[in-house]
Every structure is written in structure tokens, then in C-alpha cells.
Length: 164
Image 1 (spheres, rainbow, N blue to C red):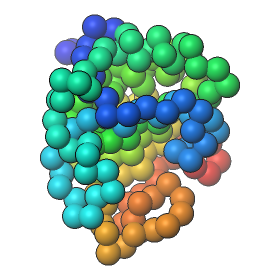
Image 2: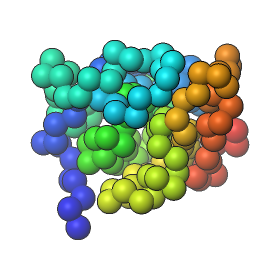
Image 3: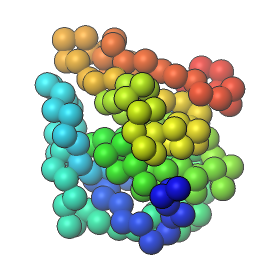
Image 4: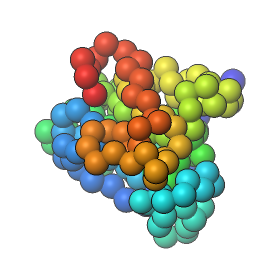
């Protein structure tokens, strides 16, 4: 069906953090993926917009090895940039987290309906516990919680977390 099996896929990563407690429930392995064309005015991560920077290239297998080495971590968070602009890599990373028994969360500027309409969208959604969706709106900025702006929605896609 054209879905990735993982390891050899290239993924463009802007940054990573192991053990974050600010990007979802529990201690998390966070990846900020490189590349976003949505152009949300006032985005607080503009350095992630440029696509496919050579210096940011790695493989899903290399990230998975880092995940295996992470101690005390219970979840994976994908952020950006825009994870759904690297859907095959995002799906492979989410599946790697599931193999570890980790919870999964993704921040996306796309709405859930827009993700569902993408070829790999339903498969990505099936691997998520929590999706925070919607384009950032600077005029509706929030200073706390997982949402960057009031228009964004936190979707609990499984019962794993009572409140994300």
C-alpha cells in the first residue's frame, strides 16, 4: 500500500530533546521536524520552515536507535515544522514509538480532516494517542497548555491519557 516500513527512510530533523515534560504528558522524546509551507503568521518556530536542509538529514533507524537509548521516557512527540509534510517518516517514527510501548502525540498545523484526506493521514492518525491540530493564529495566542492558539484542538484519539 505504499506505507513505509521504517529504518532506511530519510527524515529531516530541526531539533530533538530527550526527557521533555513540556511537550505532552509524562517524560517525552521530542522531535521538531524540518520543513513547513503553511506560513502561519507569527509562527514561533520560523527556523523550521526551510525544507530538507542537508544538515538536518538523518534516518528513521538512527532516530529509533536514539529512542532505544533514551531512559525514563514514556512517549514520543512530533512537532515542527510540519510532521505531515514528512508523512512516511512521521508514520515510521510513530510506529517505532509504539513498538517501545510509548504514547504518541503530534502537533500539526493541518486540521484532523486535512490529515485524514492525505494518503498516509489515516495511518498516521491510527498511531496517535493525541493530536493537537490547526494552524497557529497569533491573534488567538495562548500562554499555557499544549495549544499555541485558541483555534487549535486537542484530539484524544485513544483513552491512554485522561487529559493531554
